[in-house]
Image (cartoon, rainbow, N blue to C red; front, side, top):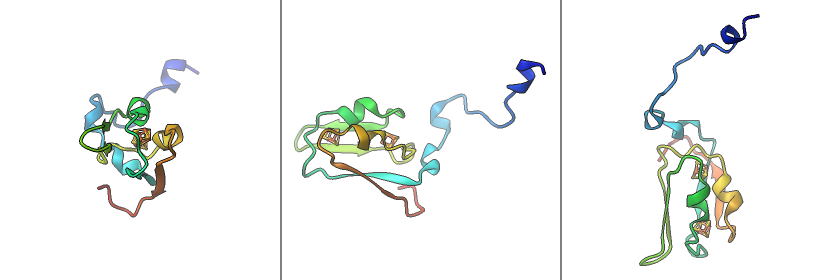
Length: 94
Ligand code: SF4
Ligand code: SF4
C-alpha cells in the first residue's frame, strides 16, 4: 500500500490551536485547593495546553482556562503539594 495514502487525514484539522475547543474533550476537570497551593508554578510549566496561570500575589492562585483544558490530569500528577484533584466533569465546560 502507498504509505502516503494510508496516512491521509480524513477529518477536519485545526491549523490554529485556539480554533479547537479542547475543553469539550474533558471527562474530568482539575480542581485546585488553593489553601495548600504554594504557587510554585509546576502545573503552569507542565500543562501541555499552556492554559494555566499561577500568581503568588496577593495570595497564591491558579487560573485554568476551562475552554481549553482537556482534562489530561498532568497538572494533578506533577503538583508537589497534591493540591490538584481531578473530579468528574458534570457536563458543562465552565
Ligand atoms: S503545582 Fe500545585 S502547588 Fe504548584 S502552583 Fe500548581 S497547584 Fe500550586
Ligand atoms: S488537566 Fe491537562 S490541560 Fe487541563 S490544566 Fe491540567 S495539564 Fe492543563
